[in-house]
Image 1 (cartoon, one colour):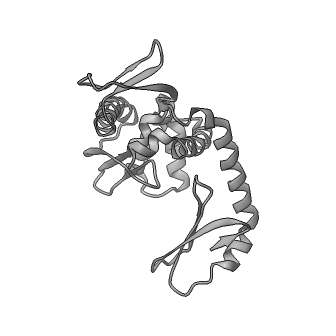
Image 2: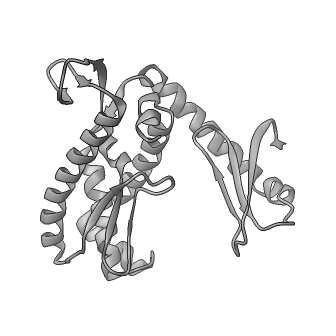
Image 3: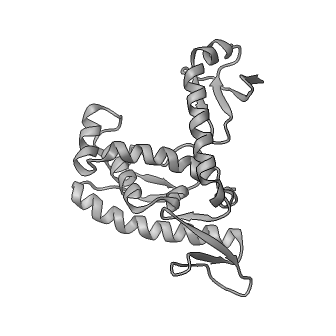
Amino acid sequence: MKYEGIEVEVVRKPVKNIRLSVLSSCLIRVVAPEGYDVNPLLEEKKDWILKHIEKRSDIFNKYSENSYKMLYCGQYFKLKSEDSLNRCFFDYEVMTVSYTSVSSFRTFLQKKLKDDLENRLSVISKEMGLSHGKFSIRKQKTRWASCSSQKTLNFNLRLAALPPHLRDYIIIHELSHIEEHNHSKNFWRIVERFCPKYRECKKELSEYWIMIETNQIWKAVLE
């Protein structure tokens, strides 16, 4: 179905709370139970929907010229496919990344990210006085990271695209959930203590998510 000329995907699930989102592809997604009429919700949220569609279109246009470059650590790298190589690597002097195949590049990114996060987790957890369980890298579809009740941390592979300060914010955010499992006022006080500019970070992350979702290289990596 369409709303205001925009494609709408309705996912039928037995949920208590109706979920409405605008994807980076400018697709509206509604998660609702069987029999629920989504049209009144779309009308009610019309201004919100159009605002988010416009925002995503603006970001796409802003970064479209880099859609075939690899976004890594907040910087863009040109890709060099070299079958003769037996490894992948970034060359910061000429801003290129050499790779042999998408699968090997994905594995390379996962390892680099895991090593980087392991180092930063060690530093930040000590600063916060918090201990955590195991952590893993996953291709999560809707969130940057998560923290379980057993203190296990899961980080999205998309973090590889982020500059260091945003990775640190996500680590601080997830470690704060060890103290506060919800997003209470006390939770945000903990976050602010270790990341005073967390509000700016949240805004940046929103833009980076769209940058990643509209980037052709990242689409291939996340398949």
